[in-house]
Amino acid sequence: MGQEVLLQMTDISKEFPGVKALDHVSLTVKAGTVHALMGENGAGKSTLMKCLFGIYGKDEGKIFLEGKEVSFKSSKEAMESGVAMVHQELNQALKRSVMDNIWLGRYPTIGGVMVNEKKMYADTKAIFDDLGIDVDPHRIMSTIPVSQRQMVEIAKAVSYNSKVVVFDEPTSSLTEQEVEHLFRIINMLRDRGVGIIYISHKMAEILQISDEVTIMRDGCWVATKSAGELDTATIIKLMVGRELGNQFPIKTNTPGEVYLEVEHLTAQYSQLKDVSFSARRGEILGLAGLDASGRTETLENIFGIATRKSGTIRLGGREVKNRNSRESIRNGFALLTEERRATGIFGILSIRENTVISSLKKHLRAGFILNDKTMRQDTQWSIDAMRTKTPSQHTKIRSLSGGNQQKVILGRWLLTNPEVLLLDEPTRGIDVGAKFEIYQLIIDLANKGKTVLMVSSEMPELLGVCDRILVMSGGRLAGEVDAKSTTQEEIMTLAAKYV
Image (cartoon, rainbow, N blue to C red; front, side, top):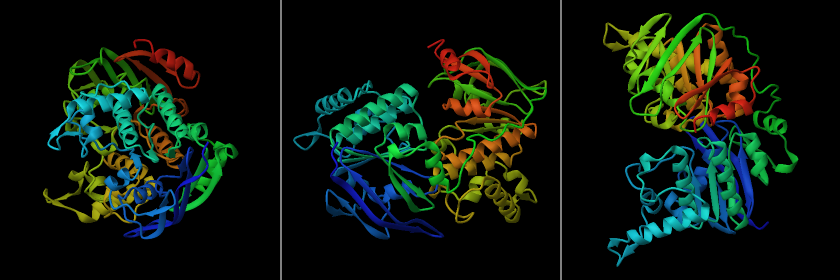
């Protein structure tokens, strides 16, 4: 393992209006090592990496790459200098091919005029073969799953022969098998002397893959330690600045009478077929399964944003059609989507606008003028109830951390006073402290008699929060288990039933 210093960031500070995002943070990454970067949402991890990558200009501090001071003005300049970043929120040209996405802005050409498609295909295939990625370079980006798009992004980083590669929450949309594949790629890069910066909230992953761990809190450096010296409890204490007892709140909800009934639900344009189940008032019903098992499709068909071929939905014994999202909201349903950036937030709008957008009718005066006072009050209630970290209600939502964006969306839905909450990966990309708060919120909602359907790729989360778990496989319902008595092995066996 190489030990020479590859990247040195010293006393980096960055301020945004109303918030000091980074306060004299330092980071040292050695060649041939994996250096994990941890902290709660809003701790400054992504901001630090964006300062390195040229997306943000730093206010103070110095950055050295292989001993030479650098200050990248753009991500293009960073990549051409050997620093690549695989972002948590993918930003790809979805209408273009896989190989277009890898070579965009630097196409191989014939005579400097025509794009050399043959070379582009061969170069892409060579990188994919080297990394063990099984994706056709000609495929259109939008036709492949998010997990494969993530792998394409990793291949793009490798194609620059990068000295430093930053992975920002790389496993948030990957299955266990895909995580193992990612770790093989990371180990291969480490063996080649690449310095890896790995941002994740998943403790087990960090302890498995890292050599060193730097922990940040509230924009400040807290500690840098060898991964061998750390355990989960120590990391949590350093991250949140306090002991965090149980990972999950005590379950206090008691499911009542059957409230939601779904019968023979079949989708028009996905593999979802003949799914039937019921959920009770005050119940948290989990949906488990592998990628593309039909979990998300179940929620989308219930909410009416995917076309239903057949099936019946009843609420309190009364049939509801839920033909579109507007009708579903009127019927007391709310859907928190999986892809926060693509289908959850309105990035250019403020916290207030994002919070009240689903409940605007209650803020109308004289039928057409919006009441600024009630919108301000509701937004403040949401910020307080969710403990959202934001400088003000007027801050643009895109400048918040992922976890705080998620809290805003949750608050938005609670203001519609729903009876049924459909939550798709509600804690994806969220730190351990914020996760606990969201779990508590879900249990509190169940205590108030709300029915909660929750999709999660993290089995401990389903076991810790849910009452029952439906297991999906190949678009069908493979089985139902009691969260208190089941095991991860039983769930995985059911998940593989129709694969």
